[in-house]
Each structure stands twice: as C-alpha cells, then as structure tokens.
Amino acid sequence: MIQLVLIRHGKSDWGDPGLADHDRTLNDRGLRDAPRMAERLAASVVGIERLLSSTAVRARTTAQIFGDTLGVAPKLDPDLYLAPAATLFEKAAVTGAAAVMVVAHDPGLSDLAATLSGGGIDHMPTCAVARFVWRSGSWDDVAGRVADEWSFDTPRDAAE
Image (cartoon, rainbow, N blue to C red; front, side):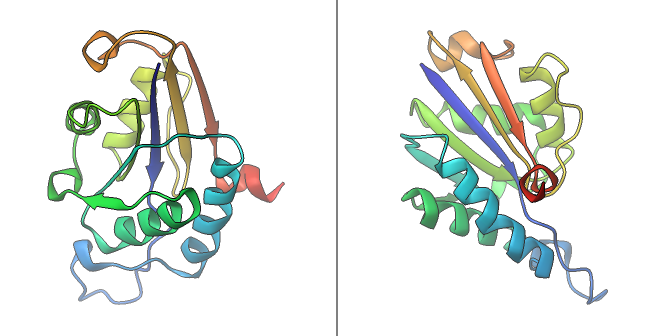
C-alpha cells in the first residue's frame, strides 16, 4: 500500500509588505487551523513514515505542528518551495517510504491533488489535507495514476 498526504501550509501573514515571500509567517487563522487539522488527520491516519516540507516559514511551521501531532519529524527540502506537481510527487516517491506527508504550496499542490483524485479535488485552500491511497504497487506503479481511494478535508469542514 502507498499513502500520500498533501497539506497546504496554513494561512500566512501579509502584514509586512517588505517581507520576502519565503519568510512570511502564519497569521492567527493559520495558527488556529493547523493544530485543528493535524488533530483531525491524526484521528484518521496511522503510520506516516516521512514528513517533507518546503523551507518557507509558513510551510515549516505548519509541518512542525502536524509532525508534533503525528509523531514524525519534518525534513525540510528547499526544492518543495513553490514546486510543481511533478516535483512534489517525485520528492515523496524517492523517500521509498510507504506513507509520506508533504507540506507545500499552490499551485503545485492543487495540480497534484486534481491529478491523483481524477479531478475530484480542484483546489487546495490553505491548511487543506488531501489523502491518497493505492492499495497495491510501488511508487513507480502509482505515478500519475488516480488513487484507489482519496479523501479531502479543509478547515471550513472542520469548523462545521
């Protein structure tokens, strides 16, 4: 079984227009949503072996919150910053782990989620979590293939 969990970083702070995009932090909503979404994910998923994160501050912070909740340390990868869908998938695949979580950015995450869900997910809002499972095969076998099952959760769903 191969499992891939995609997480878009929490809502970021735009309060300092002079701050580089890479250095933007989470705003209050992002700091509220990330722990709530991490708890929701922890209730439904087990066995995450690797947690990969963009080096951007907002992604690193989100990854640390999810990692603390799920008991897995984030590994920072500068190639995940604003990465396209193919790079996001490739970085997960080269870990060789059966269960990988990736915290990164749009539009790459939305593009990858759309592909793996067969178009069922068209946009990953901030702090959204998309989980994809292939019941058999290796990373090479599942590349570009619609997942056997998938789920999608957003902070808006968590608030209801």
